[in-house]
Image (tube, rainbow, N blue to C red; front, top):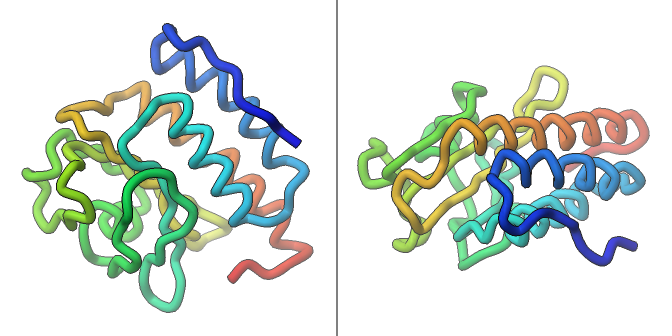
Length: 170
């Protein structure tokens, strides 16, 4: 059982992503339960960066449904064509929003959110869900976050693929 994640507290975000990625991979490698793995990934990202909100929305029955997260209460359901999460889902591309007030159709799950990055999680040819990270600071995300979070999502995607052969994900 893992007791914590190790990272340089004074390092750049880029360095922290490179330090936590292999730990995340090791953490979820031996666990087949996707929800448990997503919960641990959210916890690691929250601990490492102190983001305002970190979590997952999982595609179910024609909408994105709240999954494991760390932070204040969140929207429970998001339509595929609504908000930043819906945009990432439908375009299958990472969406980086420097100021959520300027994003057309932004869904304000929390008034404390100021900037956001959402990365789609693709399993096979379907979008499984999205990783959503919010900050209470304007323009808090950049290229290191996009690269780092996309790398972590690749780890999650490999884990999902390796376990879908033996069990069905709902």
